[in-house]
Image (cartoon, rainbow over all chains, first blue to last red; front, side, top):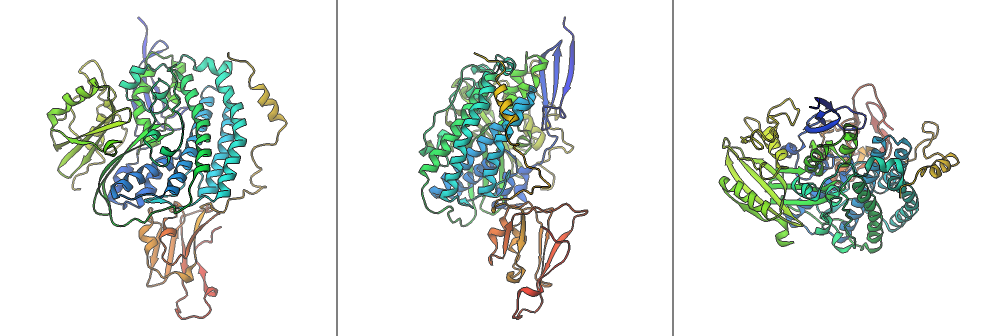
Length: 359
Length: 123
Length: 133
């Protein structure tokens, strides 16, 4: 009979930038059960609807997360716009799409860096983040913020990107592509990197469905599902294929995310070429009344927004189901039967954003 | 997308488990479950998704009504149910299959000092 | 088809290329013009309507019409720009330059010269508290 022990993991751990705690039940070196607990940085943002009116909530939702800040703001705005029947101008939709894809780029590069850090490849971590820095600079040039952009409003966006700025961005991305190929090549082909990822953390397609996984977790298990195909913002006009893999392991998730990096660059190029002229915001009158469920695809997967309004300027309820929250059961599934040494990589493989989860 | 993805179906509480089971048979996954506090009652919304379709079930319950757990049907529902219980104080039945799956965290999923922070007396 | 030593090329290139970082304190960081650093007010145009005070999500702005003062808690401000968008006189702006560290939290106070029919406007502007950026 193997010896059982319980090892606490987190909330402070070298690979975890954010606080989540797991109680790992080990049998010798093998994990047999993992019990999560969160709430170390719980902020209760959802209850702020009683104190902030629906316009101010845009700025509150943006601050749910520092990585997908723009998408949180956009998801919330989309939900309210749908309740109020506001038609967002086409140019604003394209601008939102471009910012969304830039967010995805920088989020995936951040994840690649953290992954390299988790298996101790410091130099690769630095290179991933060096590339990410260029995207952050582009954000600062176009929106004025590196992390929190504050360009969304109900009915459109606040800042426009002039044609020469867009052209410049596309040029920067073209230049980055070569460097990205070099860096991602190491993730995909290096012996040491592969030995840590291939065959580790298998999430079978049936489990992925049963555990309600979303985003790259789901796509790496062979399901072609991507909320961008529902056509919010300008995604309906753009041409892209969903990237999937059938290998179901950590390596497959890495492949999917790297594929999405290049896909994002391509979508930005398409959007920059197709963007129409015109207004960037529609006028909004009155207060919202009604309810709406909105789904958007964040870098980490599908996010759910539920907004319920009552005709006053304060909402009744605003609920955000973040992708990390949906991916936690899948993570617990992959942890079962894993080696203790693989636990950090398995936690990172869902791209956890705990502060997102702690709305 | 049909109806813009806003198929909200109201069902009584007894229908919850049969509905969840029939949805699982149809290959749907649970996309989210959330709770809204309405002063003297709770409004629960369960959303199921298949591909790009999504359907929402709405249940209105009195404050102390016992809600059956759908974790035996959908394993990933335990997080949402623990969340409802801890943040809103919904009277959940034991979450998970008795004695087999210990997924009822007994108010320890969220390590917060306050009990049911989203529902306070006198609000 | 995994390869070993695949990082060598990049490592060698690194040795002979310029650093990606800048020598920060000596070489200052240049901010793009849209950077949201801090809120500035052109107090002479202000009509003390209080829109910015009501709009501010973290409630960092205080406007007092009676004494003609406009105050901002620099460290409560989240640089969202909502006050700027809502200002009817367009006298608020958000400009580069972050708030510098201070020993204690203090409101930045701007007072409008009391004479409303003054012919020379800009001269008397006094900025109490600590001046930023």
